[in-house]
Amino acid sequence: MAAWAGESTVTTAVSPIYGVSLPQGYRQWELIAPALEDAPLDELRTVLGNKLAVDALRAGTLPLPDGAILVKLAWKRQRSAAFPSATVPGEPTTVQVMVKDSHRYAASGGWGYGRFIHGQPADEAQHKTCYACHQARASEHDDVFTHYAP
Amino acid sequence: MAAWAGESTVTTAVSPIYGVSLPQGYRQWELIAPALEDAPLDELRTVLGNKLAVDALRAGTLPLPDGAILVKLAWKRQRSAAFPSATVPGEPTTVQVMVKDSHRYAASGGWGYGRFIHGQPADEAQHKTCYACHQARASEHDDVFTHYAP
Image 1: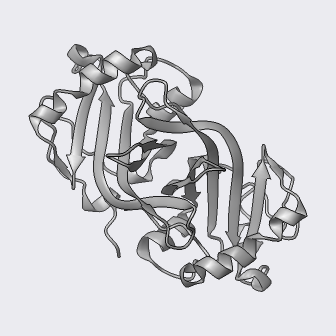
Image 2: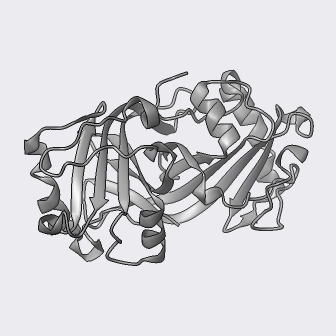
């Protein structure tokens, strides 16, 4: 069986600053939306969410409730061998997590952040940038960039 | 249809040629992979699958079993207002369905096809192209373009 994110990268390792881990079973969570990140990253991405997160984003209920979790999977984009006008996921790059806990993460808008590379958390420097960017650009949507795709 | 008789539908409309309908609850199904279709379509897409389909594609078990269903959601791609290097789903365009039933659809590689626009099936001319293209380009992967994204 091929390795897949839901089981090969779950780890007890937690992110610096926030102590966020990869949630068990996230690869089975419901789709919120795909996205494309331009070059130089040139990544296809997909945001999944647990039921609390999906229900709130679908209904437009903000802020999201405590317990909501979003997980963004990212892959390098590559040309499809079978269908030349399509590009598809190549190598997985990062898995990024947002966990809502308005008490524990009161100092960062109620969100804890985790950025994982091959199942291991990125360093503290990378985690220092999460909140400032989300807060500066997405504060009208509870610091969440992604909208539910109809 | 016995293999998926338990799946009721969100619409009574069925595709020409194949009689495929939109399966109930497909928006909650598990992610298989996102994709980008180049201009002029310029669409972000995401393929979801029922458990039979996801388990087979994740494990690399081909051909997919009877009862497997794949659903591809597609949206026009638009620039994110909040994050300029990202493009995200805009207007939904089509929802495309593949249903495996090796007996009912023996003449089309075991797959029935359905292409829906705003919940209504596209015309017969559009459905005449499905099998020939899938068979010509993806026969080594049971006529399925999409691979499970790790």
